[in-house]
Length: 217
Image (cartoon, rainbow, N blue to C red; front, side, top):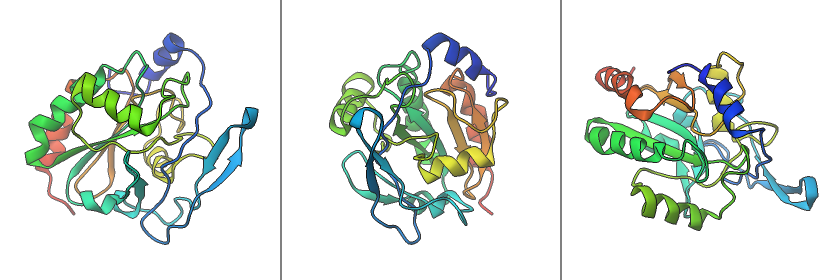
């Protein structure tokens, strides 16, 4: 299943949404330091210092890697990008293997997969960035770029995901319903398609190949 309708089943199978604490915020133009507030229960919640207004392309955004480095997504300009919100303790976590297989097969043709851990769904990504990186490497041999934890919904959502959701809404609206929702971005930096968590990476391969075959605008 390649549509967002699959997210209905995902929510039913894995429970209600949990609260997340995103940290990897930013955009390319005019970045400013994020600010932290106390969320429910006194936990620190980082909120973005900027929003997605005026953002028209993937290249307009920036994010923080798992190792704490600022990364302008313009680094991936001209490539086909698959953006995925991930988690380490989810029923869909084995999709890491499929995502890595796609990356290994199609990287030389211009594909890059970007993983954004998120703890908003069932608190299924509660580890530190170091723990997430170790988990992905040891269990799935992940070599594609991974970023620091973010929120994908709500007031603290990373501007990238606010933009992605506005560009391609699901059948249930813009909100992301669970881990491993996927957004395919073309060589021109525009969102091509959105896929539900239930969509296996291998089922996206033909769409990726079509996007790779298209020239950047």
